[in-house]
Image 1: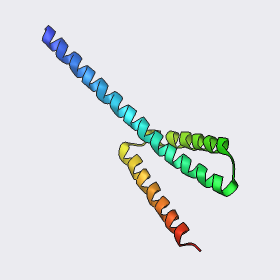
Image 2 (image 1 turned 180 degrees about the horizontal axis):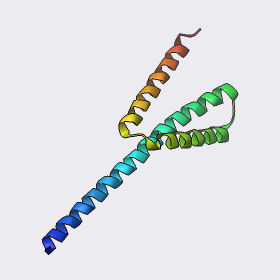
Image 3 (image 1 turned 135 degrees about the vertical axis):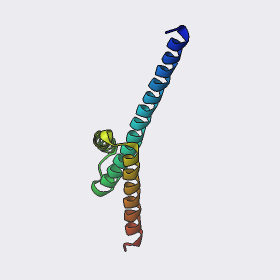
Amino acid sequence: MGIGDKLSSFSNNVQEGVKSTTMTVLHILLRLITGFFVGMTLALIGQELIGYGTFAVIFATVVVMSVIMKILSQWSFAQILIFDLIVVLVGMLLRMYILVAP
């Protein structure tokens, strides 16, 4: 095994490491963004219904975000994106209900 083969295997290992790290970071960011939007939405709904303050909104957002991140930790990108699509559609349905309701 010459120096060229060692260098080639090293560069392949670096490429695989960068690819793996990038996919892991993107998966964490996707879960984080999904959890933040779901958490913030539920916290703002709770604030309007119950009327709690800023600290409670932040606390509710963090709690829901951590629960969503834990639930989505074993899901793939496609499953998370389908979950996001369903959440957006339910949100649009609730918005339509609010606009139509007397």
